[in-house]
Image 1 (cartoon, protein in one colour):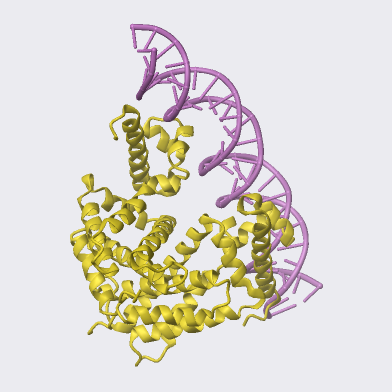
Image 2 (cartoon, rainbow over the protein chains, first blue to last red; image 1 turned 90 degrees about the vertical axis):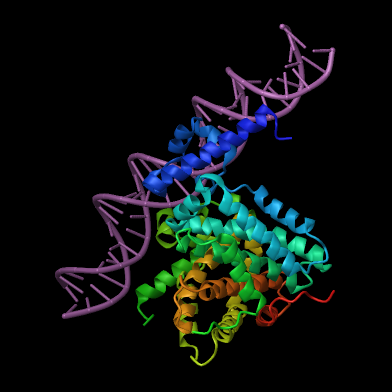
Length: 200
Length: 200
DNA sequence: CACCATCTTGCAGACTCTGCAATGTTGCGT
DNA sequence: ACGCAACATTGCAGAGTCTGCAAGATGGTG
């Protein structure tokens, strides 16, 4: 499936561009790095850069838009007897585990770089927003409602994004010593309880 | 306070630029409008445009970063005996009412234009993300916890954003026939109940 | 009225991003 | 092995975005 030399090369180039962007920005800051720099370090022409990423920022994030699809696919594949909230929670737990297991600690570096640049934080929020839309559709399919008829699908999708973003933020805050899946779990516990005020 | 001629002129210029951007983009689409066009219609030089908005997109959104501050200020001003969730909900209801009452139906137009351009949807998400950060701080102050010690502030702030975004999305979906405050209320009802699956 | 702060503007220049056409590679059938 | 078709890379030209700087216009103040 992914065996063709062509496919592998494309993947490799994409990753090379992403890592080059990430490292350079970590070293010099976002404004200290141009597309030409990134292309040079990745060993391709500047023009080629734009065949892989529409934007310098996107290269730094390096998130595949197909990630969102994979998430919704996982949700759809989940046993139908589970209620949507439980299904979504389970799917996100798996996703969190996968992220924490990524080789080279790519996610920690990514998150550190993002956190240091407000623009990138915004971009990340935007990416989440995108995938929430797709997620809402999948949830609607699960509950037998339509996205524009009921609050539930859109709201639950947005809340799921909130849970993951919160967990990521706290993961970074713990300097990645905490367990990401556990942080996701904690968030869902509070959500499922109806957000009661914490005992102070 | 806001009485100086200078202040008023700045406000007027800012609004003129925003409305010019909004109208032009509504007519020709985002890519059919350049900063020069916007500046021309607003009657200022292109260079001046950038004294007011860092980006063409920002001019189309036209959201004052001070809006976020006003929200947190309102939360802080809210009676301290209310639990944070109730306080936040009340504050958002007021905000929703204010948005729906805006003259000229600015918000409907804004939302329609935004919805038609994915980039702007992303930008809006980003703006929400920003204000959620500030909100988290205010919530932490209210609950006596610290943002990086407890899930609650960050999560509740993110959820509040989810509620408002969901309500806005549905408002648009209803072609602005629904009551925005009511949509916000519905979202909070579901949230406070712990997101139970809807009876289908 | 005169001074200071602030706002506007033009200009030069770096950078981002796109379309197009030429050139090089890969995959596949014969 | 050969050669064709598909696809990737590259350079170039050009429009558009955005910034710094310095000159000029304008509102606020004593």
